[in-house]
Each structure stands twice: as C-alpha cells, then as structure tokens.
Image (cartoon, rainbow, N blue to C red):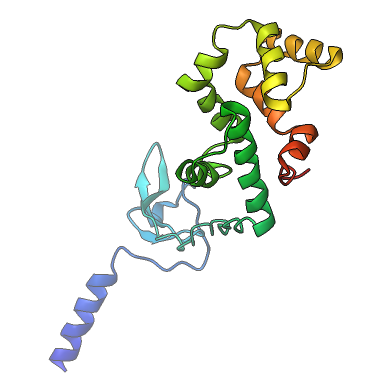
Length: 206
C-alpha cells in the first residue's frame, strides 16, 4: 500500500505544470489567472506556457517538429539521342567542303576525323570556320586583300569562276557590314553550287 501511494505521488509531481485542456488555446492569446505557469498544447501543436509577457499570455516554449516534407523531385534529365547516320554523313561532308574551300585540297584523315567529331558537339560550324580563317595558310593566301579582292579570289578558288555582278555586290556588302571572313567562307562552302561541284551530301537540314 505504501509503495502504491509513493508511486502516485511521483506521477502526480511529474504532471504538475502541464495541463491537457478541453478548450484549444492559441499562442499569444491572453490566459486566465488560474492558468499562470501552466503548460499545454496550442491548437497548432506548439507547446505553450502561460507567462507574463506584456500581460499574461500563452507563450510558445517548445515547437513541435514540423512534418517532414519531401524535397521537390527534380525534372528528369534527358540525354539527347545520338545523331543519325544520315546526320553524321552530312556533317562529315560539310567539313570536307569547308576544308576544300579554305585550303583548296582535301583534308588529311586525322584532321577530317578531328573536326568531324568536334562539329555539332564541341564547336559550331562558324567556330570551326573562324579557326580555319586564323590559319597561316589562309592568311598567306587572302590576308592582304581588301573585301573586293577577297570576294573575287574566293569565287575563282572555290567555285572556279568569276564572280557574277549580283553575288559580288552581295558578298562585298556583307563584309563591309561587319561580317567576318569565316562567315563568308561558310556561305560559299555550303552553297548549292559548291555542293554540286564537290559531289557531296547537302548540309544538315537542307
């Protein structure tokens, strides 16, 4: 009997100061005089105590752990499909034409393979063309020419004919408007006339 009474005393002492209330309370709400020092659970799950805080109010003294939220699922990453054999063949012929237009000869196998692999993956065609335009071979052949002289020589070297008046005026105007020679070289190497002349596949998307 004495052990039972002692156990009840311990349990009662543990429960002193914490109240389970029938009515819900809100944090910040004024509390009653009888509730001073009492701790309970607010309507949102926070642990609140009736304390003197600019008036006796229910003050948050322990917040419940918010429910775990799963992080947003990132959008699935999609790897673009590899180029088709047709696309790869057209890219290869584009490099062949560009090389021949610049250097008046076919590409060496090693160089052709390198630029084929770079084209469309690491570099655009205009980037490759700009790189070719900086070569010593190209600069020695065209570097000292003005726009008109450059266009005239490109017509002869690439297309194998004299410039027609309309085409000559067009390309000189393009250069004088600020386009670089690398862009103009692509205009010639990817032209339908040069595609026919070289017997290669048309450009990708043509």
